[in-house]
Amino acid sequence: MSIVIKGGTVVAADRSHAADVLIEGETIAAIGPDLAGDTVLDAEGAFIMPGGIDPHTHLEMPFMGTTAAETWESGTAAALAGGTTMVVDFVIPEGDDLLGALNIWEERATRQASSDYSYHMCITGWSQAIFEVMPQVVARGVNSFKHFMAYKGALMVNDDQMFASFQRCAELGALPLVHAENGDIVAALQQKLLADGITGPEGHAFSRPPEVEGEATNRAIMIADAAGVPVYIVHTSCEQAHEAIRRARQKGMRVYGEPLIQHLVLDESVYANADWDYAAQRVMSPPFRDKAHQDGLWAGLAAGSLQVVATDHCAFSAEQKRMGLDNFTRIPNGTGGLEDRLPVLWTKGVETGRLTPNEFVAVTSTNIARILNIYPRKGAVLPGSDADLVVLDPKLGKTISAARQASIIDYNVFEGVEVRGLPRYTLSRGEVVHSAGRNEAPRPGRGRFVPRPSFPAPHRALSTWKEIVAPRAVVRDPALMPIGV
Ligand code: DUC
Ligand code: ZN
Ligand code: ZN
Ligand code: ZN
Image (tube, rainbow, N blue to C red; front, side, top):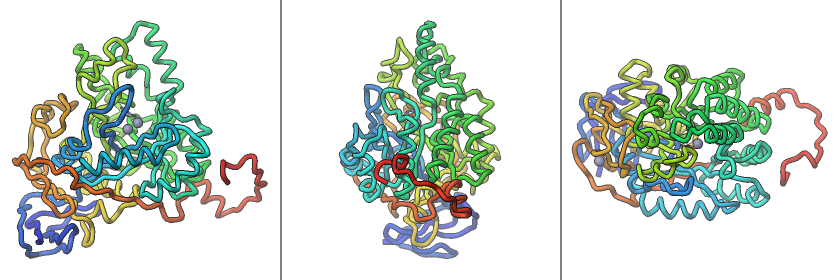
């Protein structure tokens, strides 16, 4: 059984060209003129692109006294409906039991996922047990470890813990990820705001100003450099953080920045909305910013100082958000976007001329596959790549509405936004899993885990390149070495 996608323009990160795409089994067999196959999909007037990869989701994540309502089943079905064919979700361990948590995530995903998927492992503390188990996590195809610099008293790690973990990542060829907000300052501001009687969702934004993100982003980058490892900063939302990333990259540091589609489009005015539910449904961390930050994020994506667009899809129901009715610090943090990332970015990015179609492909798929070490199996339209494809129709549009979404959440932060660039077809490993105008039943369990091997050497930060160029005589004091070295 082969499929040929005919009459479209193949859009890759590096070029666009008119060609048919032949799929045999789960992979792309050929790209070129006049190809023939058993089934023909019409791509006339449309763009054939690598399926979106969302590098940042929290499906069914236990968090802030509840569990994100978007399940692996509904979340991955929503992803496919919006042209995203793979998600990378964060495994949150309790204590030191990283492998136990991985098993829990694997059980949920194996049973429910209809798109392909992978994981990042969260490091929420530090111990000899964690140090020792990290190689086994990498051996199971998880080559990235996430650190929270915020959520004091819960997920947050301190600088010494983060430095130890980053050094371990360097040894293992793994990539550290960071949620960069200064958790001490956030906690202090929260207490001050509550003491001043500010209990509504607007307090959430006041307690997490851009300075706390800029400071933590810069600190994470410097700690990564001291540990000799590249670093990936999640949900870069403001110019202060972008500036730290840009400066580091200009020096030659391997640092990546990830704006979310929500921050590119929505701004802090949502928190002033008189409707408590409306405002609370938009509470996430970092919060939405003053509009002035958006131009910088868009420019960063075009210029390459920011590399990927994600969602941080962590979706709670309206009822769950009401846990914080009388105290903004109890509103579960998180918003959705998995289904809408591609069409919203197409409409607000490509149709406005901020991004080229090739840059769109780079930031939604190809750069992500490269940074996460799964290219060209994913993120490419090349012979031999997985046939994860979206046939994006620039004329096909809709008005976003929670009433008509695949996601099971009862609202949508993009409600009422008019988008174009919907998928005419989404294919996952050679199977048509979504076609416009049809309501296919999701097929839980068809999604597969995508292992991500450790990064090949050199997997280094600028500090360690310098050491190679000009070796220094260093006195190696065992007391100063990280645990286990
Ligand atoms: N921010 C959110 O808004 N939700 C999940 C975790 C995070 O860092
Ligand atoms: Zn985060
Ligand atoms: Zn997140
Ligand atoms: Zn569908």
